[in-house]
Figure 1 (spheres, rainbow, N blue to C red):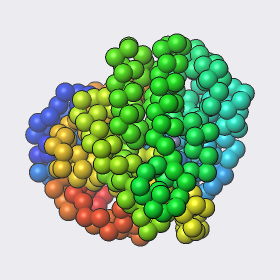
Figure 2: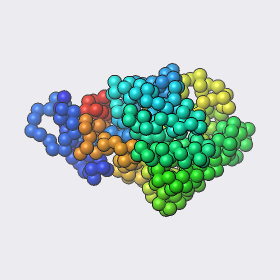
Figure 3: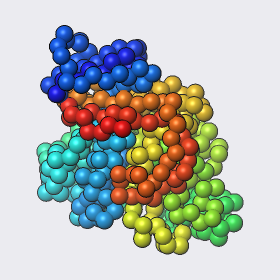
Figure 4: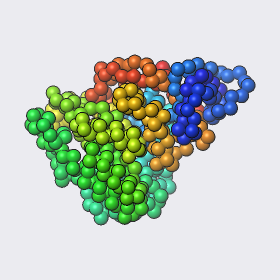
Length: 421
Ligand SMILES: [Zn+2]
């Protein structure tokens, strides 16, 4: 099918394009040269933004092992509706993604879905943080990064070996930064609210200590360390320092961390329980500043879907995490673009160009896309978040009922229309 997207504001940071310009999809491939043919579908994108599809490098597929929470097909459909055309899965599933058989399962199942499905491999066997996994074999099978997400490696020497091994295979390491001794049985950010609620506090230093350790190990090993889900002011400063030292590090944050504070946990709302926890207003300020000055390179969701029974329990027993894909772009538009005047081009660079660079994807640029990944969204559209309409199996969001701006109208992935409002 040949498609013409007309009159839209085309923004593609990787192609240095930010102008009103048409783009076509010819036999599944993107084309900035518009041929004189009869198109099967012509879409008027006036006053809309047209860009390459978003690339979300931090997504929990829950498959294999926890398909009652989410599966590769449902997460792909949720991604398509969210304008995300490439998703990268985390290795903490069951069995863990620590060998080529599981990598193969995820990638093959992913091929049958509507978006590009990639996966990380676990740094250690069974995510136990002790014995290194078969990183070389997993690389051959197609992993795009190594990660210790959800099970941060505590032993610095094992982390050093994991980084050396990843570096050998030319893979970046996505690091969940948390000193577990510091957060044992902790539920929310250390401070007044935790005291008020009588919940064991989670010190910000648990995150910051590990960011510093992992940055030092990036310097020592030369392996690119990508700091996942940054949440604190001190963390932003730590990343800035590490970059100043010339260490090969990058950092990501997630929409919840520039939108909500731990006030969202008042009333024991388990949907606001996440790992790392929501912080304070000064942290949000530092994160927004870090996004503006490029200390924070990447926006990702840490999409963490759970079943109702995982969350409809008391706060202490509830699972950590929130479903994130279907609110991500509207939260970026609302909080970054409208409230904090971050240009949409900058948001897209952090949600398309930088993640592609990290994982070696070519889908960020119309010049290099093999099959077209293109989205059309309206940054002015007003929406009310309704979790019952989520395509993700996970309805665990603290944003239900939020009035936001920004709506995806069309998603083309792998050269085909996979979502249309
Ligand atoms: Zn994590």
